[in-house]
Length: 199
Ligand SMILES: [Ca+2]
Ligand SMILES: [Ca+2]
Image 1 (cartoon, rainbow, N blue to C red):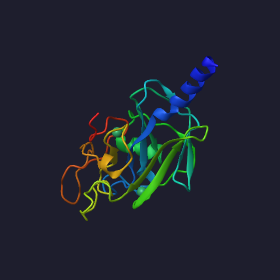
Image 2 (cartoon, rainbow, N blue to C red):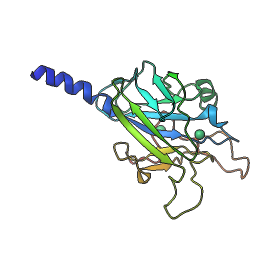
Image 3 (cartoon, rainbow, N blue to C red):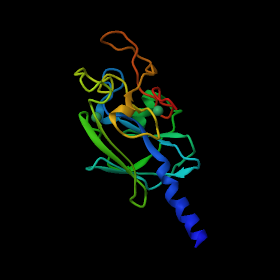
């Protein structure tokens, strides 16, 4: 019975350590590319042990995709991209990607719900973002994550998925300048530590 309890708790504990850590829901068209090809989602393993991601399902309630085999080490981050070749063309070949089958969970530009399930159907993480995230509640200006370059990054990875814990990225990794104002542009931190995180 003791052995059963230990094995059972290990099976349950491991996949719960995977969180959605960053999303690019509205890529900057002029510097990055079109919405359909350049959306991506980053996952992070915040647990103490490696986690096999094979069979995990990401869903927006309409479309579902299923992750191919990939072992995510503790503290590691990996990206699932709408179009892997487009992603590599923009960000380079060095960022770890996990391939997938199914239909891309298109990330609505006004807001969407993303749910990550284990291969057994357990909810591992759930995120309902809005294009209002990233600005103060009484501020009517456009979020930097809403089509002007920045991704939406989770600040405290073990914290809640509410607007106070998700912020537009502040990295300046884009190799191009904004064609409108000549300023540097953020493209987020796929596969790397979040630029707004305090961890
Ligand atoms: Ca989108
Ligand atoms: Ca990141």
